[in-house]
Image (cartoon, rainbow, N blue to C red):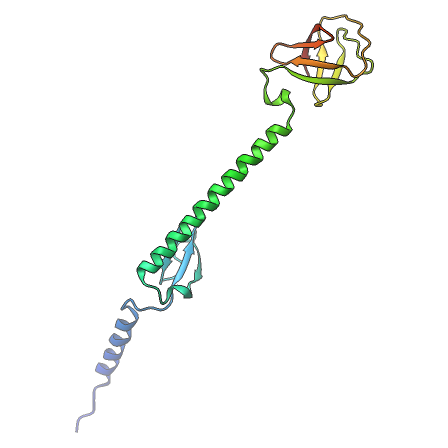
Length: 174
């Protein structure tokens, strides 16, 4: 009686195991997301270093259509989050602009303010004064001797003018 040949048995078993493992019925899936938010589902594990992968057990029993729908929902959620972040950033920028003094937001327009220092404000050549918004200005070529304490003024940065008590003075921002 002949003994069975072990080579055929080993080769047959190897082919059976190989065909089972590559038949597309793998139960291990990885859900990978890169820094741009792209999602990739794979059964081979992470291959691109930009992708961060986690074991996705929930994908085991889903059909390709179900997985596609879930990926679409995730994409929609990601898009809504990006829109919300953009809206929040825009709102923050608007809030910052509103909080800034008028002189910094519009160099073209005149705006009202008051002089905090020096006291009294004289309106003479070379006098440096500070407005309520914190900006510093210097009187140029004027001698008014106003003796004003915390006066309300209108300042026009683009024209280099300060209007105080109906008088217009030449100024420059420091």
